[in-house]
Image 1 (cartoon, chains in turn yellow, green):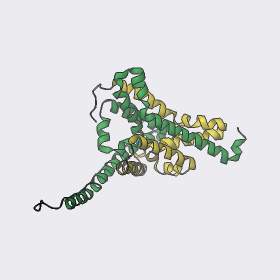
Image 2 (cartoon, rainbow over the protein chains, first blue to last red):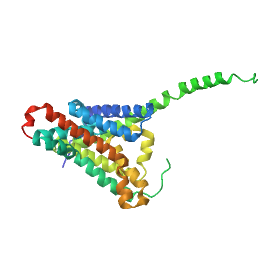
Image 3 (tube, each protein chain N blue to C red):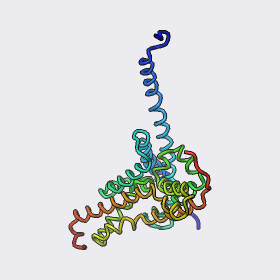
Length: 130
Length: 159
């Protein structure tokens, strides 16, 4: 199958994605350097913030603008969860609030569990120096 | 007493000024710059995958799932091969904040506790960091669903 490379490397979409994704990471870096938050807490803050902004409908604008620049950072994971919960409620009512979020993020969660376990199995047993 | 050296309090103060002048700016700027371009690059790789999916006629939510799966898979194995830690040391939040950091946070503790066995060691410790992320993320999404249910009256009839 021939691929239209000009569409794959659509410069405008890649540039917007690069800038927005980079800025979100810089916010995280400032939190790491300026506060004493552990990386685990920062991940939690980002996912929760994404879920709240997604629930308020604000994050959708960022996703429309930057594509993967907004969905690849962990805020996008939270946005995915919140969006799924809202879609679930629309479709199934109360039950959807419980099923929709995880359903929408299932690919990420399941692949993280599966690949995570596999990668840990094949990892070199060498202890890393911190 | 020691008249030939400067006043210790004064020199301490000078030292503090010197430290303040030197330390906060340069590392933060450098860290932010590295985080920016590495984080941006990881997102851009995601966008390239997503563009390929779009050409093949997949809709946006499916293609963003595919992007997540591919990036998670790559970063999980790079962590297992001890390569991701080196990237992380250099890029900081640039590799932590994208979904690659989530995969890394699963594999790193699992590797460390491998000696405790394959069930409770690897299987259990996988979630030391990812567990809280899932707890707060999923709980927040359920609350969002509740709030949506309450404030959109037409959907209450569905319950």
